[in-house]
Image (cartoon, rainbow, N blue to C red):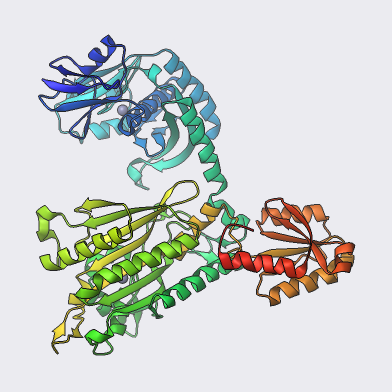
Length: 640
Ligand SMILES: [Zn+2]
Ligand SMILES: [Zn+2]
């Protein structure tokens, strides 16, 4: 006997009968059953006792079932069109689904419309989807007869006696489910792209074709997603970066995951860094600079060579001693702390550095500026007394929200990672330290009125932390800020301060980064603004455009005047282009202000002001334009 909650919110007590039949009798459809957080196929016998909720594709769990079913429809269609195709795996993913397939011949995006058309046929046939249980031997024979070498490899790893398959019409596929009741329930789908993917992610094995698609419960939701996807594509920093001449990554010449900041990108970075430093100074931090390499001994003492070696590059030999590129800045900041005896009155000490670190990432996971091998963290370490931690954490949050807000991020998602209370032995540090630290994080979040998710057991072994994600202009979430306690390094480096009692005490150490890394943050900013940076960040803030060569000299004078006022301005003189063409180019370069000077404006010491939005504001004095630009810089807002 189990209590079943139906999609129409009705409920009933049921024994025996599979839910799928029950729903059919009532003219309802569902995607799967949710029991104790576990997703079950509607064809399965009901569990004994407890409550079962029938989910539909409108629920997140049911959406996954819809998309996974769509991946089977995709595989079915591919089988019909390419009889020799071999199937690997076809899961639902965050935005849709994919299927990894070995096609008999190489394919490109061009084949997607034909596959979609065949999928539509499979859907129109509305084939019932049945679950079939086969013995190991039967499963092997079936897959062998179809030449499904990848699936054979998969069943060799399943230890159960009975292996689950799903059948729709002539197509049968190894699968643990769950699935919708029939192919006709997949209605609103789209194939999106193809990409290469190694079988099992192993570069030594077959290269398969990953066909990406998505499916939604309604046509409207599908169309909205497709529109959103187009917008995201238009903002891709890997395209805008080179287009706007901001940065490049040259795998062949320089090396994968290593970023070259071009002059325009470097100007944006300079603004970010300057603002960051000023805000840190105001918040009582001290700036430090530390080397890019350090002796093996240092990384031994910090524990990096024991616990973080996979993320570090091979050592280099300098006069017989091994040195490593730094993967983190912490040991250097601690070394600065330890150059003096510190008293309780000296604390807190806040050391901040835009510190460039190098970490090993497999080439397969590198991604534009978002995942690189060398990057600059906006790092800081706060060393403080136990009675100061709450105020320090609050200070970090204040600073983080202020800085992120200046970059136009105003929506946040906060997670608090604490230890697993059932497994305290997995963590170092005393109960008292954990409680103090966790409470200080909670109280700081509450005092800011920040909603947060408490993640039990998600803390790393050496301390609890707060993570802050921001939502960008397309509502995508990006992890930026981390405030992390560390009970490990103070022990390892024997950090102390002299207390009021004249005795040595152990300080608390908090690592924190607000933007994460400048490279990744820049990538996110490019996408957030679609390359149209607000005035204070724009690499070129104003361009002066002469209508004819006759106004060239005047244009240069205007640009020089703006530059003298602290504005990044250029005059496009002697370009041999029409005014219309220059305006289009300036718009494509997303330059906020265009100052047009014809003979009349030159005669009056004026310019005609155009904005990159296309707005034409007509003639203005150069002073008025300068003040307008400086006002926009000062406000750091989006207004031009
Ligand atoms: Zn499946
Ligand atoms: Zn650190």
